[in-house]
Length: 176
Image (cartoon, rainbow, N blue to C red; front, side, top):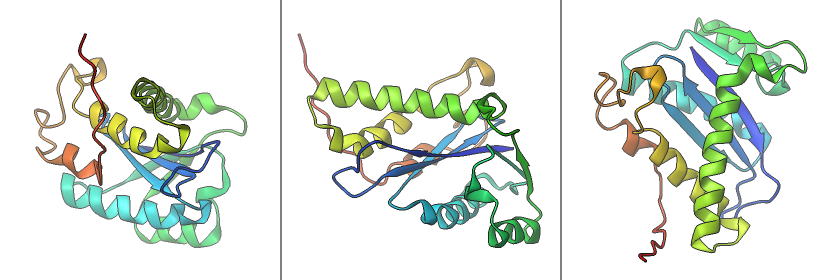
């Protein structure tokens, strides 16, 4: 199962992004975050993620879980899910707790990104670069829910982490 969510950030980044589309694999806790400019681009991002995940993981996507937002509920997207045999589970209205894995992952990478951006002394417009780096750092981290295994040691491939980072910026590191 993959937990999915869409988040709008308060300011457009310097490279024109306004939203993050989050995809979190339930079994491995592997996170994939796509930066998008318009909310309407989310469906194309989902199709790209589906193709990438099925190719890289050699597993078919069977279930997705989303909140009750309208991003997966229009007729075209329901038909796409039905054609590809993907079961769509959605949470009850106004209950973020039911999509807690995606919500918690979002909170984790946003907090990491904000911390890195602030420490580097960069303006808020650099949030997209900071998010890319935060997800890049998150994925190889051993987690308790995966028995402290990383994605490369759990049999999901060695190059998954590199596939996330389209372009990483060099962040200044201070030595005291």
